[in-house]
Length: 441
Image (tube, rainbow, N blue to C red; front, side, top):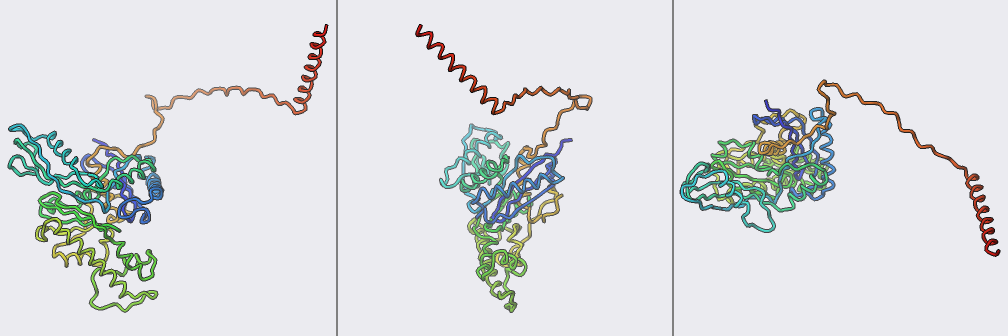
């Protein structure tokens, strides 16, 4: 029976730095054995690292705490899969084709050539391609999503290229690999990994939208006929609502607390008359409702940008992310889009053993961990080397060696050195006089 692999993942978002360690079984089951996180609002803006040194320090503290947990010790985290998220991430559609000899059977080599051609598509010089997701294939005149084994003299494919600004990956590499010394086993687009884990195959076939509402960004992924049809990242999130409340002369921490405990995305029928430390709750409600409606309107508008209608998504919306926990937000989405809305959750094949963190808070990093481990055979943890034992299982006796004799040290007093030097000088003086006299004879 194959032993499970120990794997790790790191996900750095606009609100926090999270890491997870798990055991990946050959059956496809993942056990999350340890998680940890730290807030990182000041180090990350819109998903792009701004302060590499501060982020590295926080990440090192997280890794150190994880390595000291009984589920992991004495193993050390030497590698990790890293999540990619940020407002520059989006999809670009491209079409590529290969002409083949007559009656050629499509195999893995041809599909790989097709994918490499898609990855090499010329795009805006300010962006780089991080992945290519096939939408549909055409072998001759046959449309298919499983072209392997089909026969034809030409294959054409439509790909969704996932692109982002180069500094997104570059800053992650500088922080995680260069400063923290953790090998990056692979980059995983967080939005795609969460869709892989959370969405069912039925939802993808029918048509659905996955909405991940973070602190400063909201990613939108639309699926139809089993594949990705549209992906975009909006520069709006839960922190925008918090900063609106800050305008009422509150510290951000206090504004966040009021938003979570008293805020609601849907306006009340009657205005509140409550006052909390001089702050009118009616003013707080107006700010939260206005910004929530703006965020929801931008989310709904993405369906039009994808060239689709609400009726094309009968499976509805699936919401994840910290900002989606705002009271009334799912209901506001339902009112605007007239489609079912549900909250995303981890599937049964991802078992959360570390229950200190709510699954909703670590859903993204767990998804990155599963997607990375499922597509690779990397081992992310190492056990420090132990001394090898001989066949009898007993350590070899170590022969005791007598300590090497220390060289003797002669201690000479200052007066002794002075008198010896003076004697030598007097002797040289008289011998010099004798030599001069002999020259005169």
